[in-house]
Amino acid sequence: MSTNPVMSDDAGALEQATLDLASLGIVKDARPDRRSDESASPREGHGPARIIALCNQKGGVGKTTSTINLGAALAECDQRVLLVDFDPQGALSVGLGVNAYDLELTVYNLLMQSGIRTEDVLVKTNVAGLDLLPSNIDLSAAEVQLVSEVAREQTLERALRQVKDDYDYILIDCQPSLGLLTVNALTAAHGVIVPLECEFFSLRGLAMLIDTIDKVKDRLNPDLELDGILATMYDSRTVHSRQVLSRVVEAFGDKVYDTVISRTVRFPETTVAGEPITTWAPGSGGAKAYRALAREVLGR
Image 1 (cartoon, rainbow, N blue to C red):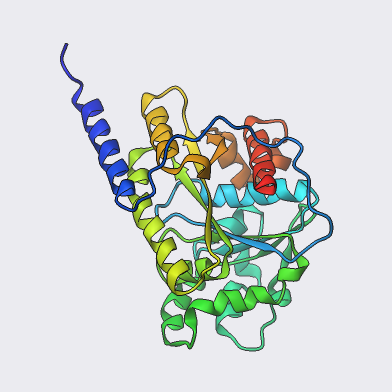
Image 2: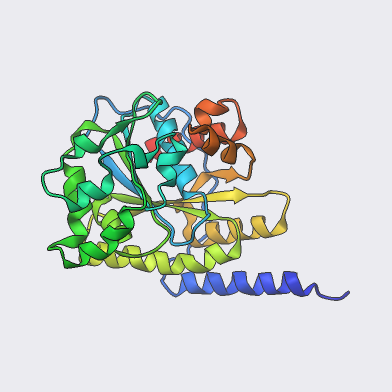
């Protein structure tokens, strides 16, 4: 029987990706079977916030979708949540029905102008308990302008310090790069969630991201932890998706969330609607998945 060259290439790429992860010393035994804690309940009272950066230098992996919907699902659990749009593309703001170009103040002003208070930039969303720090293309200039600033890596952390006692969770939607804005997000965060598309190009870039997280932890933020890997855009019908997920579990063990986000046409619809899937299609599989993820986040 002849060998399928495409499948052979995929297998080789997956093997190399696993070796890349192994070179960082993070390949582990497969995780034990475990289940989400269905009884996970919100902590009493509010604040100070746990700050989580959703980060992946590869674009199109479901990072913004996960930020919006995890935030909305946490808000459903009576958590006060602040979402930070830290991507100049402003997709997070658009996904919540906010046109940041109509606003006088955005994250850019907060970072680069003195005298701007964080609460002055906050926008209330249509989801109870869910607030937003909006962004637009102006934020791209901050990447260059911050270079000359003193303690430039701590700029976002100083801004969030003003409001962290008002929230239970602050979720930062990072841009798809490992530049100064992303370093700011990692410096401000307590933990990192890595949305990972179930295809091998995403897996190949994971070692570089983990290396960046380790460097920020070593040099700027000793409290930074990898909270978890979130498998996204999973298609159970394809061998490739199943193989990638298996390799991720092999490499990261319990760091991989039990919740897996499958491909669905519902997510693009929610972007057009400008609201989370938990309110746009509350009974859908996507909404149920992000509620399950919220329970995992609360239970960890």
